[in-house]
Length: 205
Image (cartoon, rainbow, N blue to C red; front, side, top):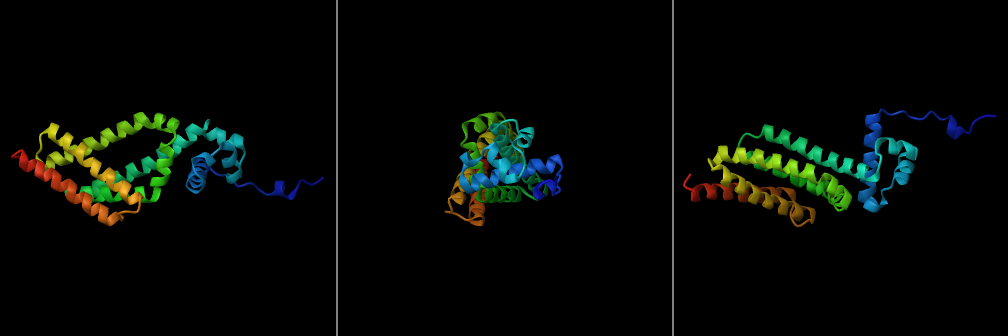
């Protein structure tokens, strides 16, 4: 007796890395199209065209899958940000390039990241890593600000922590459609570099 035609078709075999990315891509698509709660292992298996067991081979729990997706989004931003930082020719250029990149990511992927962070389990799992990532970023910009403005270390740390709020708020305005990326980038550069320069002058550096 012949097997059904559907079983006779040769199944496409993907490398583990490609299959993993395919599952994450589908999870991202589902979140953006239907919301976080549309994501289940059964739904992903059906939409990708694989068994539920195979999904569990890559991600033992739903929380692990969502955390991996958030990790991927943040790692991409971090890697692109570092590449931009290494290409910057001045402090002004460093702020401009990294701010534009962050705002573009917020515009294009902010809804996905916000949805993932709204899940308490995912937020808790990522808390330590996000804190460590933020600390690394602050240290990098503190060193750059000290080279540019000659600020004492405590003032440089406080200054960078405070002006970081400017970029965070700009990201929210871009995500809400109140500002476009170029306008918001220009405003951030003016406020950040102007603020640090004024701090330098106030300290008589």
